[in-house]
Image 1 (tube, helix red, strand yellow):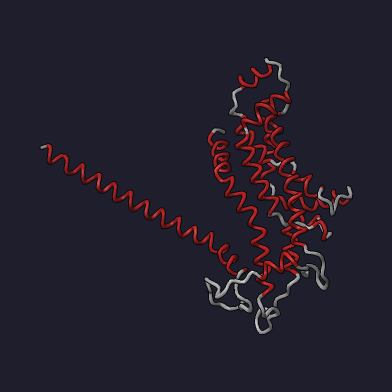
Image 2 (cartoon, rainbow, N blue to C red; image 1 turned 60 degrees about the horizontal axis):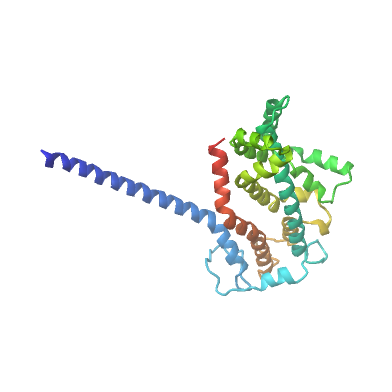
Length: 314
């Protein structure tokens, strides 16, 4: 009797293990296909920047490996003047754009993280008239696309004489509804008793925020800072609208103007038989993408943990 009962149980376990193995295999297969689709454009960009001279980019054949590796596009991109503007040459705008972007990133990430952290603390732990109304109104503005306010911002900054200055990009980026919401969700989980104990011990409100709330909120603040860094670094629309002086161009805007300076006529007449211009463009894209990849690799664990904490405990 015992033998007859043990056989079905063993069979069920074997069937369950087979189904689990099959499901895992299908999951890994789907993830592999998705990874290939996501990573292949970046791989093609890398190999295209390193291809041999005189490579025909108009060819429909898909060469997955270059016949020879060529670093000349990177040398030209970083070491020589490039035709950024139509009909004329200027300084190496890639390096200037890199410096300008770095200045904007540092200013916006630091100021935006601190200001939105303070706003999140106010909405999470302080009571004031109309608190829920103001927070709901701010959340409703998330549905508005950022492009809707571009004309208004342009007119406003034109009247304030802030066009072609960094302030035209910094001021709109100081507040973020997403940042306030993200950090408020996390700060709400900090026990009120802990803050009250600090106040009883004589801590001022500024000390409560800077010595208790912000240190405890480091994961979510770091997550927001990383999102802000990625947004500012990759932003093209803002600099394209507000910055028309080459000395103020960001890296993305310098690459955009670099691409515009090259006119291609696909078909019978191709104006770049050496392929060097396309290689330089791909090299510029690689250089622009490297900082974001490096930051993501270094802070990947903190980024994921910050999103998880703010999402689960909200």
